[in-house]
Length: 195
Image 1: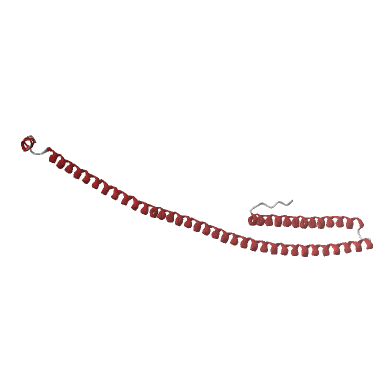
Image 2 (image 1 turned 180 degrees about the horizontal axis):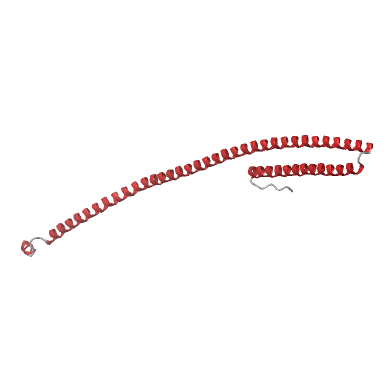
């Protein structure tokens, strides 16, 4: 038996293939282990970058949202300023219109007073002329000539009275037109006389 063993050992190739195979397997496993380690390190790094991106990206979005909010607030402030400016301008226009209406009303009142005074003076003058005519008629002076003068004077006085009436009507319609313009300014719609 020991001869057989020795013969069996003699037939073994040197170096022993079992040990070579094991060494080669160890080398391959080491290389594979190194590759897996490198791959796992890369995955850890990728996971870390992903987590960093997930943390950083929302803050970038938040920054953009804040920027948009600031722009939005600025636009609203501009609109508020425009409304304030419009209100100030409207108030100034209404105040000026009110003053103009008051001055126009005073002017119309003064014109009416003057017209009344002139009409009263003319009526007094006309009364005096009528009394004068009555006296002439009763005295019998120049019956025909007196009648002609009376007709002419009456026509003249009547024409003057009609002039005052037409002038007063013109003043009235001018006032109505002016008040309509003020109404349109205040309400933004034209005023119609029928409504």
